[in-house]
Image (cartoon, rainbow, N blue to C red; front, side, top):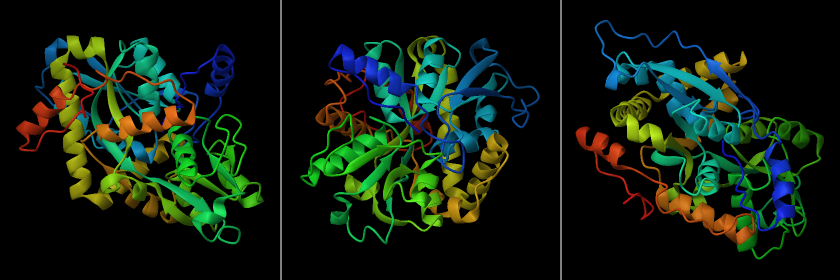
Length: 376
């Protein structure tokens, strides 16, 4: 899941939020994804087919993603060898990350070439580099974020006022969404301190379930599978964020690529995108097998699979998608600006969907739109 929106208005805020950037965000597997580290993943499942050739003579393509259900396309595509199938003898080398900032750093240093990542770090990485380091080249997932509350303390949405609600991190995608929802309710909260008509408690997802059980928070606006973990602990879903968006769709995971790699190896990028499109179709055609595949990948990452009472509802609430849902990314950025956590960004050029649309056309699928934020 994504890192914080952070384009501070003052030097003081820059220092404060830089410190926040170092805080953990998502814990691996049971409570979502652990924030702050990365690990190279040796992949012996994706065997190179006999007689296969390297694309553009490239030995390997370095792919990054989080071991998290909202990165289901990457989890399943890796686990089932579907990316490698499209890459021929160009070896797919995977690195799993537990932090948006560390994945952006890896992209900038060329430690990875392509990555699955949330909208906030994509926006942050693009704006901080003045539009020079990355492009969003495709979508991956929508949905999977819920407001889960203690039903004994909160029986309606209006009851959220005056309560303590956790979000993963100051300025992260869920935090911004919750602050925007609070504002639309007409309630006042200071974005940075979290104090106001609602107490917004920034809580690492790995400790949020324990905080909920102890009663130190009354609920949480969190991604899957943390939301379903809270439900398994007695919480109740009082709002699904998807219900706040047109067509109940909003971007939670994108595919990004370094601009230099896209320029130098366009056919390799197309191959990875083709693998992504085919993986998403395989997930759609084989939902139970895909869920088991994703859970097997999570078990490899953590040593423990998600229990059925967590993965079953979590899996149902996340939709894989080829469409990056560009209009919703633009809206998320505007929400962050409204909350005072982001200077108004120039996102023109953040998307390059030409390679994806080429792949979709070959598959007999309609093109996707960049909402006017694509390269010329």
